[in-house]
Image (cartoon, rainbow over all chains, first blue to last red; front, top):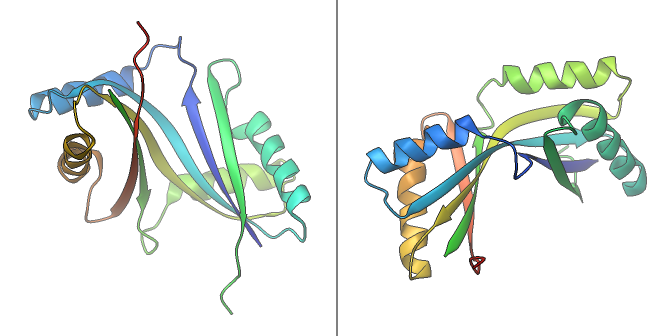
Length: 86
Length: 86
């Protein structure tokens, strides 16, 4: 059993209205320290794979095919072995 | 200058329709390895703080006040010093 943590972020040149709105909210609350916010997605995916290489290959393909839009987003992921609770 | 990476996830007992929909999409695409998906938010926040402790305290307060809903979400964050490009 593996757990993949996937981080999907907008590419740096892509406009991020959600991040701008959050930054506006932070400023309104008085957090003047904040200068930029970029919003992204975080996914935890459990995989019933016998092997790490198989799990990693599957996650790479999932990102390309469904989880990220490669035109405007980039992604990275970590795959970690977990012991299922019996 | 500091960069905070904030991860906001739904608490384990909270229903996650977005994660369930992504899992359905993965199954439809033939990724039978995937057994569970939990969806969350990932935020990168730049802070113009002279000190790490100040930046960390600000991020903690941002999470409590705006970024996460403490009733249904949990959060964690990392704060890293970055050198601004001149």
